[in-house]
Image 1: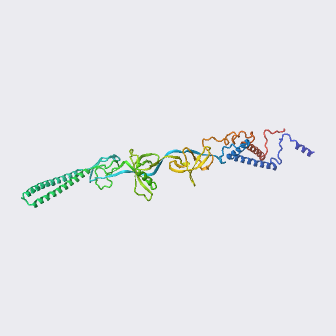
Image 2 (image 1 turned 45 degrees about the horizontal axis):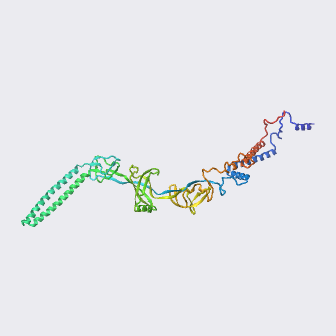
Image 3 (image 1 turned 120 degrees about the vertical axis):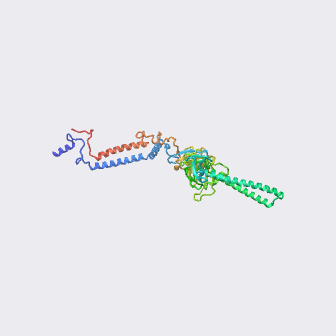
Length: 486
């Protein structure tokens, strides 16, 4: 009876207990439930890993979707994202070949040198009486700069003048005496020896008078040297002496230094390989324009002309010194200033030019990629001409208005298909009705032709697996929807 009663209790739940049977041994799940939960958890993790791989490989997904879409339509795939040779389409930049004049420049580093630098020194010794210039003043040639005490030199002029007058009077008297002796000699009243002696005395006095004139001239010149004037036009430097100092011609620093600023020269180095080009243009009588820029090559300082080349090559640098002259009306060039020099050697008129980035270099020579009308490229061998800045001349192999690839050419081959940045995306790649991404909305409803359907199914399976795994891995809990028998 007790056994039958227990069997009845196994078939009918006791009042106040749940309909869900409690697992044997209390709340610990059975071994079968553990095994089933582990399998479901592994399947769920695999599904999540596949879904993550699908999201991180959009190219492969698009290719698969394109193939599926094409199979559904019975024709070639609408995948516009693939090139003509089966590779991915490359977005490139293009530019047209233009007709332009190419200037041939010679760039060099130069140093500004004044056309004249003069150290003003006194010609006579004396006491500095007056200074008539200011430091940094612009002066012109012949302008009075300073004065030395002139009184000693005035006395020297008077002394030399008096000596000359005295000797001149003796000469005049000797000449009169000679005339008388010559008259008496004609009358045979005097000896010829006396006449010859008087004639020699006249010549002697003439020499003395000439020497006196020279002495007088020297004294007057020294008197004039007490006025110190500017020998050239330019800017006066810092003053070396003050009023009251005794100056002399042997002073090393002199009174001041005058630097001529207009015109002014720029010395620069020409590579020895470019010397023949410069000499050829100079021999043709061409005037080579020269432009001076500042240290950063952004500001133009002045424009001038090429002057001359030196007569020998510097063996240490392999260059030849050259000089250009600038008018420097605004004093933008300063002595010993560092400048960048550009010499215009020649100009190539009517050259076919392309951007420098379009020219490629290979083992067989230079080439460019030419863009065709069907959005394919063709490798074209060309001959490089003169290059300047960001443009290069094409001597042969390219016609005007042809389009060349300037960006993205590293990934191209002859015949590859490309697209331009302003081209609209192809219908098979992103949003066409028959494309891979176009069937996103019709995933689970449209028969599975789109990878989005697989994504939805994968997500649903992952959710189901996750729920199952959660249920198998922890003890059963009551929910609000469970039925409790009273």
